[in-house]
Length: 81
Image (cartoon, rainbow, N blue to C red; front, side, top):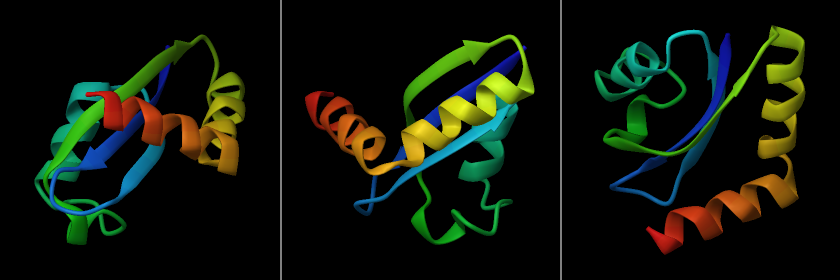
């Protein structure tokens, strides 16, 4: 089982999209500044996640959420919260 997720920085206007097999541990790594790409944007909250059966499916969904239309939808989700 794989998860595609989006997290939003509480301090800056930044949304990160990734995939993982362990969602809770991965978000914890982001918030502990253990991921170089997101270190400057800590603290994060989960704004979206979905499950897929395979890594290939997860990668396709991750690419969608990283696209322009996907990021726009994530901004709408974030702003409704």
